[in-house]
Image (tube, rainbow, N blue to C red):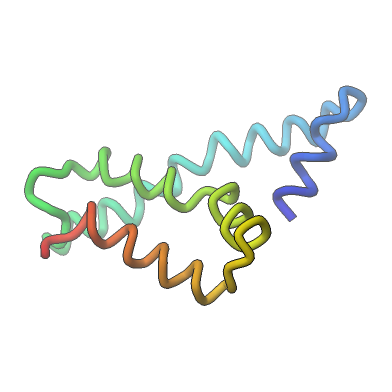
Length: 96
């Protein structure tokens, strides 16, 4: 869905879709702060990691582009992607 929206928004004649996509992209980083602050409140974040830095990592790693490349280009299953994402987020964010 996100890929279709990006493709449609690329059309110079559809400023409305471009704005919708821009709104989504502006909100995505904010959405990463909730999980990061929750992990911090649970004292689950690594001690050297601030909630803001954790949110940055969550934002980047959960990008739609990563999902699309791994599932469509690399032909991973959604389960393989979910397992990769869980382990990839766990290593840099949480206490070992």
